[in-house]
Length: 163
Image 1: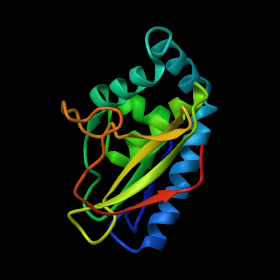
Image 2: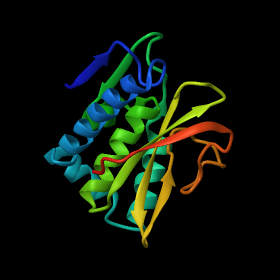
Image 3: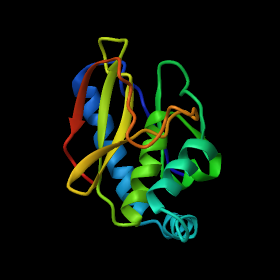
Image 4: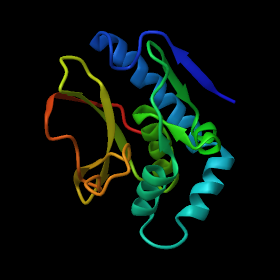
């Protein structure tokens, strides 16, 4: 079971710490996309309907949102997240990135400072039809659809490494 604790927090300290966390998230997503259990699970999930929508709805509705313990950042492998059935925004997007990679779709991270001067949220963007489309499965609310992102973000930054 791969759960990594990062003491600095993804989005509570410096932008340098955010980069370190995002690199670890990318590593977990790429490894997850090569995990036979994640591959099999994703293939079964996406064998009917629109695969991107199926992944989005699964991560949004079946993986419950739960914050990390205060003062820590915990990152889980995609398979652990599927087994646990809960994660925060970073764990949800790591799982979604791995699943999108399994079906051959590129994605990247976007961090946001939402009502805050520091980055405190992460979502994905996936590449389709020659454009990057927002993909934020964090919360299970009707307004959260493919293409949506927090409109009140004070700043945003794209993490240019792509899985």
